[in-house]
Length: 289
Image 1 (cartoon, rainbow, N blue to C red):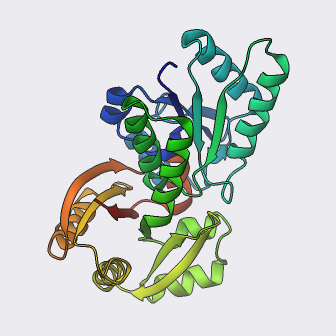
Image 2: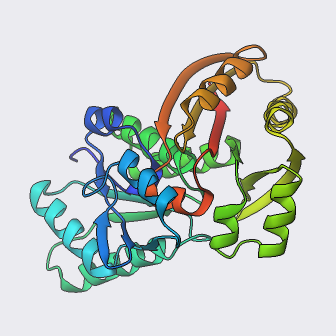
């Protein structure tokens, strides 16, 4: 059987070098500032996006990839890689309808195809590199000749072992996106509240803690990871940021004082996820080495 083809949407924030190294097929999601529409990572760079976001009075709108678009991708890949299974991994179903769109597309391809269809659609139950780490792991396993079932089993294990926290710098974007009320945002800003968010086992974002001041928030995140991995000293880490590279490097340095870090991944949080958390946010993803 031919090597498995890995597909993912762009919200996984997989660094371009890893996408190229493992031949991962990334499907860009769409966002719009008013009447201007962009494909994430193609029509607008991360730097351009955050510059526009800071100047915009209203949040850009984001939209999931449609079933028809996934059908086109799957059919093209089946022609390009005849006989190769496709493993399609997506943003949490608790945050977006992208996973459901991919499932529907799979059924549409099966109905229309005279040939056997081998497409497996996986819900990452996460966002940013919490999702991206699964994509990269799947691509590495595929390159090693793993089967679809082996990849699925490994991704389930990784999903259970990973731990992640989003350290949000401002409440403005959570308020604009309707996740908190305006009064709470104003009060939180006055009190210099820094929310710490995570994603639960159903793939839904929740608040872990609220800390006054950035320094205390960073210390709290390190404390949480130490509690999460009391018996693990060898870890992999990925840190993604919204135009806050200095803060990201500080987190890595602090983690290295408590753990032996093996794989270290750095990237920016993309525009679709960044829309809802805003500039200054740092997302930290840790899993056993």
